[in-house]
Image: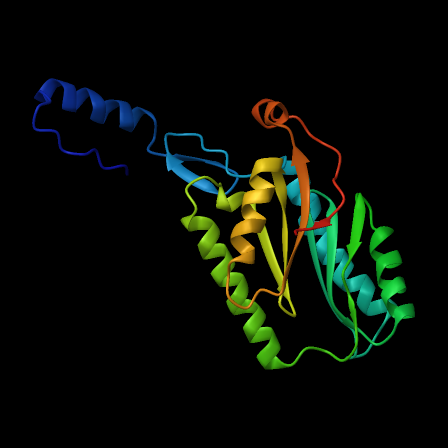
Length: 217
C-alpha cells in the first residue's frame, strides 16, 4: 500500500480524496524496464523489451555452444550482449580457438555483430578477476556520480585492466563516459562498444544500426 505524505496544509477532504484515488488504483506499481514507481511509468532501458529478451537468450546460448565447440577448462569466455551486439572477453589457448568462438557466436539467432576481444593466453588468475571486478565497481560508481549521464544506460565490463563500455548513447554521452572511465585508478584502456544515437533519435525512441567499437583516446 502506498503511503501518502503528511501535508499540514491539506484539508481532511483533500486527504480523503487522495486516499480514495490510491485505493481505486489498487496501489499496484507499474513496472517498465527495471524501475518500479507506484502509479508512475519510468523507462530505464533504451532497448526494446524484445531486444532485452534477445540479449538474455543470446548470452545463454553462447555459453552452451562455446562449451560444446571447445570443451575443456582452457577456454574462458565471457559473452555480453547488448541490443544484439555481442562482446567477447576472456582467454583462449590460440588464434584458431579465438576465431572458432567468434564464428560460433555469430551464428546464433538475432546476433547482429560480434566484437571479439578475446586474449590468447592462459586463463586469468583469481587475483586478476578480483581486480577487474573492483575496477568495474569503481567505474560504475563514477558514472553514477556524474550529474550529466544516465549511468543505468551504460554497461561496464573489465578484462585485464581494459574497460569496455556498452549501451545506446549519444556521442556526447559516449565521450563523457569514456572520459570518466579513463580517470579511474587501475584502468589501462577504455574501449567504446556503443551504439551511437543522435539527439533526435534518442528523443523519438527510434532504433539505430549497431555502431562499430572504437578505442577512446
